[in-house]
Length: 288
Image (cartoon, rainbow, N blue to C red; front, side, top):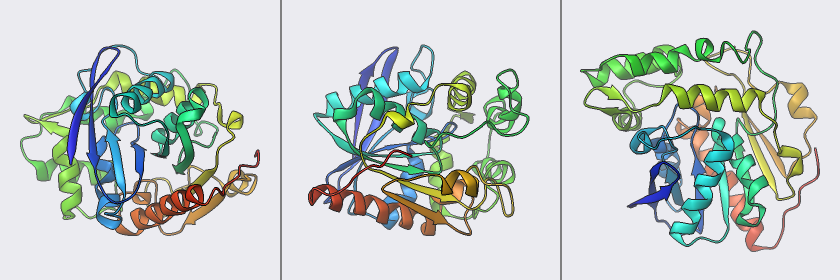
């Protein structure tokens, strides 16, 4: 495992590389997350070489200054590949990270061999009641964690599970590793401004999804937050897609698609398919 500090506009991104036997996969986390999101994938698919940045405003990159947006993240990822000497990679994005991956692929198509989108990236209408004016209120649980001091990691984990991760096991050691990376001296390393700006861009910005020509593999959860909640992607949206592959993830909510062994294993298998298809010169995209 190596950690690089990549120069970007406003500072340096922290980028962690876990070297396996595969070619490098650039993995992009979600709106209020950080690079330890991929701990479950590393556990289930240790052969994968994962290049995992903390996006600006999160984790070890929390102090990067300047506005946050999908386009800015895409430019940051371009800098990551430049610094690491990588010409083109498969890109896996989860949630908001999927939308960043799409923007990156649209801006720098020659750098993206294929996309693996995990419950994100595919255009979707804003949830009922969400407007550009109330994004901060809708994401209040994410923002609330930044406004408290956490003296006990157990208390912080309980807060995460009680608000946004209800189907996860508080005793999971990987969840503890994830939570520990969030905190520094009891404070959550997450920019509330970045959360609001990026969420606004996801739901109200102009998606470039339909410009893409590389293979796209899409995995989607049965629920959003907890059992029986409405999914981010309805059956109508999924049925209308015509991509390289579409994988349903029954029994999992949004977080569970990557923060559980079952979800991470499915993502790992899909990444393996993308790598194998690329090695065989196979893989086509049919416009949705």
